[in-house]
Amino acid sequence: MSVSRDFSNDDKQLVIAIKGKFDFSLVQEFRQAYSHIGDSQPTVIIDLRETDYLDSSALGMLLNMRKSLGSSVKGIQLVNAKPDVRRILDISRFDKMFVIA
Image 1: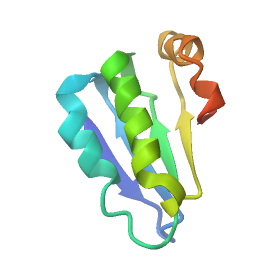
Image 2: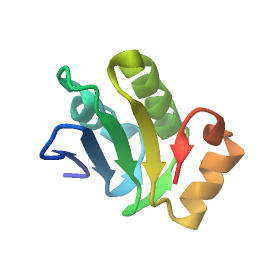
Image 3: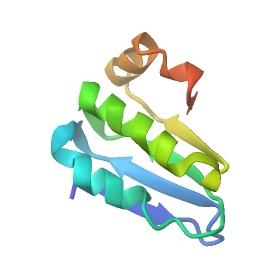
Image 4: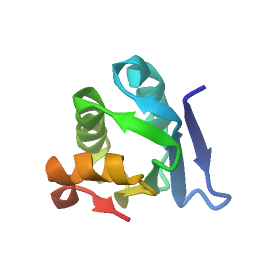
């Protein structure tokens, strides 16, 4: 599986890790990873540590997630991006819409 989902013990963080290519082939898996988050208003962390590549469809999926979750989460963070992935996020100005750490 290229997308994994893990809630912290206190349900305050939902970590979604993407492994390999983050592209259109992951649209269903990614959507399922952030569905059914419950009422705990977690911070969603997208862990890009093992993400080798992302394309425009991945950027679209991130934006759709942000729109879909709205105020049901405390925030969304994109973390551990490799330099090539970080460059795509920077060029796309995602730092204006997400916390990138």
